[in-house]
Length: 149
Image (cartoon, rainbow, N blue to C red):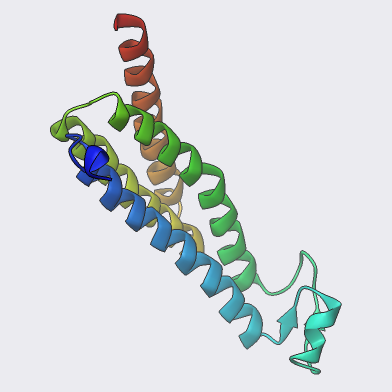
């Protein structure tokens, strides 16, 4: 662990990973909470916990559906970023570059999730595109480092 902690961008990587992880945990739990508040379950055996609940596989109430879609979107984007940001960190990128890429990405993904849940356009798309551009920048830096090295 000390070897990783000594990498210049590791602190930015670790903190952004924590933020992104809490985003995923928060969205997952909000999905479950709103489903429970609406008396909906996704598996027939879950009715044992709430006999009055309705089984809904993909449908259900709009609030839960929004949390679920925001969670799926985060699940599609967060792991890939965490992997590529880790590779860039291992390549020895500077603390400044790490902070300039990793912190804004994490903030943009949080903002994207909030806008997704609240149905705020065009902000949801704006935050998604800005985070995507950071992801592309990370990929370009990895490619450059691999080819130049």
